[in-house]
Length: 234
Image (cartoon, rainbow, N blue to C red; front, side, top):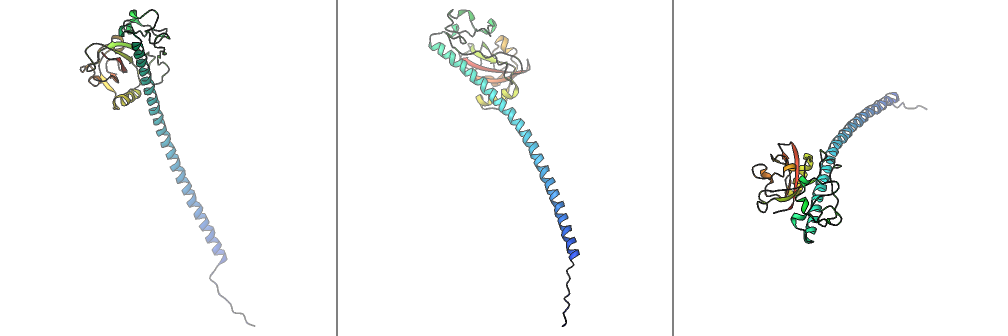
């Protein structure tokens, strides 16, 4: 019997080499893909960290602005209750154990001795005095103070009763104006020692402040940011 010889072009050794070569090539491709993905992930994480830091800063400023404004509103509400209960504007006192600077307390000597017209005493407004020392956006250990000054364009030319807080961080200052006046800028003025003297806010020394019952302005004279809030407009 004769068998036909079948010729084949397939070389098992060569085929194995080709498979190994293909596998090696695929492995190299996967290495490059993994490196590329790792690089992209690292970039995205770094960008996310930066954005997260910015968001934290913005969130801190938002919270601080809200805290300051809520406190000012709380003081204003307490004053309104005192006035409803019969306290004259001249009888309202802000004196308390933590804050008793006569220079910053309008007419401190006229309040009733029973403290029924004291904003921060239990017989009166019954709210807590806040010095804001622990607030991170306050750049100095400043206290909230209360002065009489006139803000041009509000009521008459008589002095208004105003809460003032200086050394506010710029970011929080802008957030205050954003929440109160729908602008993301800090006002700019040259009104001197607003805290100490109760200097009026006019078109000449703070044009952006006029006709606004609350706001925050950069004082070029003292190189700091001042928050003000009208408690009683005259």
